[in-house]
Length: 259
Length: 258
Ligand SMILES: Nc1ncnc2c1ncn2[C@@H]1O[C@H](COP(=O)(O)OP(=O)(O)OP(=O)(O)O)[C@@H](O)[C@H]1O
Ligand SMILES: [Mg+2]
Image (cartoon, rainbow over all chains, first blue to last red; front, side, top):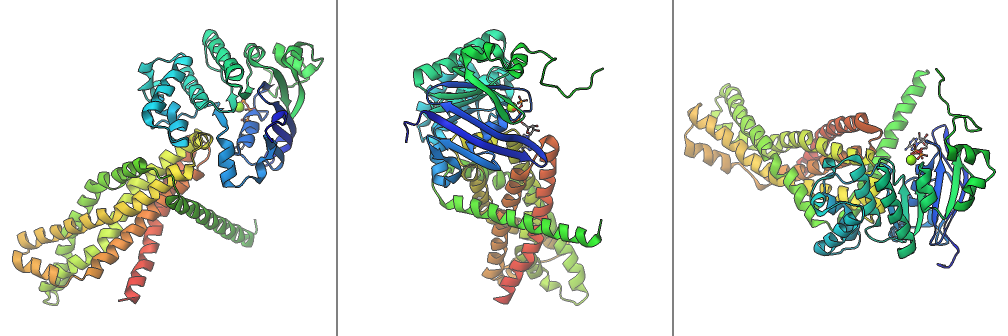
């Protein structure tokens, strides 16, 4: 089972909210132990795609395989078991505001894995250190942090339990360029050192180039291009070219009113 | 639009809501009995629901008992039945006013707070985050609240009963000229265990309703601050109405068994 080449496979996923079609036959494969970066315009369904894999949103149709197992057919126990493999950085951080920073980071260890609090706190402090936050921050509550600091705490929380699969929804948005690069290095080391499989979403091409083994581009609910990160500049795909160069002119039309 | 269609739609929406609440209740209760148990959370909830509601509920009970003594004195005076004041006050408080007014006050205080807290967690994806951290939101958020409210309210109402009777006693002895010893004797002589117990059972039911509505509306909330605001209002209104409805049925249940 666990030697399928792809850790996660999405087959023909459809999802609509009311009349709005968000995912329209999306196919994606995430290779085991590699870093895949999904790029694409705002509102194209990237976050929805991640939530479908996590079972937080139920797709209307399609198949999601995790380690070769069909996640739609999981019973409650199997779903909980599968979720243990995942770490997730939410786009909006989603920190628990009733808990201190370190309790947030240690949450999965204490509640999910029954680790003693003292031991979990040590790990939490170490992970906070890796995202550039000192022990004095650990005792604060999330509301006392800046947006970028919250994002880094959420990142520490996502990797604290050293999961097999980590999803990063816009890990570097809201960070300064130097800190963004520190985070990029951290993501790379999760893949290289821990052998994790990561699926990241970003608009930040510098970050994408640095962390990606493979890049896929989503447009109108479908993956329109995917390939090794090194080929993203020579993809020959007009949509990809327009996106990575950030041009307003091109096949992707932003629905904005021109003054 | 066709009026029949509107009636049909409202009726269907109503049934859907009942179905949702039923499923929600089932999951919430199931997780009360399935490990792991979050004892810390249970204790913390019992503090917020029970202990911190004491001032509100205590004051409510005190003034209700006082007013009850006055009113019944006036009413009973018309039949020359002033000696019944003590027993009517204690029956009124323990059987009815203690649990109902206590329940309504706690509904305003606790159901709203729960809906706001859980609703905010919903719209800021904290509930999704719980799931990804191998923690079941029903077990972590709903089960402790349901259990804590169901256990705390009877204790709270028992205290309210005592304070309420005290309120009546104060007015009767200081204002209405009753003899302290006789009033106490009348209070206790006619009181039956069932009077108190039926009130406490009501309290437990109301506690369950309060937590259920707080959690349910919190979970259902969508779309930012406005959604959370609506969830809060819905929680208090529905909890209050359900308390009054449940009050009738529990009363009837005990009435049938006399
Ligand atoms: N719970 C929901 N209910 C209704 N519509 C939703 C919901 N979640 C997402 N959508 C819609 O789905 C579309 C895709 O949303 P999504 O959050 O996946 O975008 P995204 O690609 O992550 O964008 P961004 O880069 O801005 O984060 C949006 O148009 C949004 O309006
Ligand atoms: Mg997004």
